[in-house]
Amino acid sequence: MAKVVFITGASSGIGKAIGCYLHNKGYVVYGTSRSPEKYKDAIPFTLVPLDVTQPDTITAAVAQILANSATIDVLVNNAGVGITGPIEETPTDEIRNAFETNFYGPLNVIKAVLPQMRKQRSGHIINITSIAGYMGLPYRGIYSATKAALEITTEAYRMETKQFGIQMTNVAPGDFATNIAAGRYHAPVLEDSPYKNAYGATLETMNAHVDAGNDPDEMAKAIERIIETKHPRIHYKVGAFIQKFSIVLKRVLPGKTYEKMLMKHYDL
Image (cartoon, rainbow, N blue to C red; front, side, top):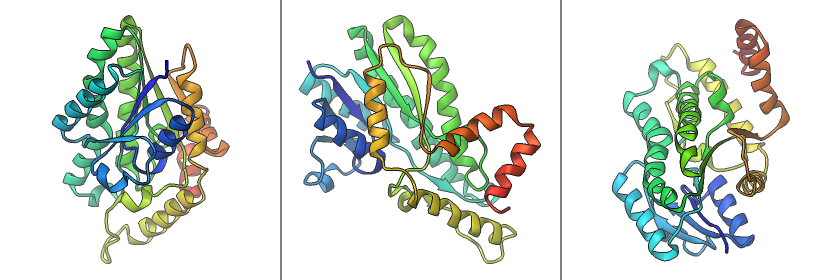
């Protein structure tokens, strides 16, 4: 019987790539979007309305999927938002929104599917984090923090739910060629800001990295391999070699040396 896969944030980018790939492979795919009607002609799988910052929509989406398919075998927690800016100049409301979307949102979706997965005595929850979550990146510090929080929480959650036959995994992508930059919150480059030149240059570098990123289908193929792995690892990294290797370097280099390397990379 085909596995039922529930993917949040599936109307574009990595989520859409994963959904289309798994749909074509014969999985039963339910994706989510805040406005699914806008994408009904462009998405080959079922889209249900969901906003991860609104718990009522999470409950309704899970109920709709269970009414249609009676099970949820895999949850891919993909919905997220980008945020850039000097931390000092980033509005507190935008910081809160990033955590609501990238951290509290995924946790609430997990809470919504766990009762069914416990009932089944099976299930696999895959949280899409980021290689940025392994390091504090200049002018992306809040984004890094949201993804790091989800990475660490998943480690604990995985141990708590293993007794119910449920697997939990982090998948940290590097830069992929998606439209994430268009939907990202950018703190404005203020003319009188002491960060103006450094932040402006770093913003251009970040956008260039996304534009030159890998094909999102690489992530989709990795997700399928993980779904079909009997004993999945806790952490996976998917992306360019140098981005994955940067995590290794952080483990082995002295802190100040690693900091200098990052600052050189961003011309700071």
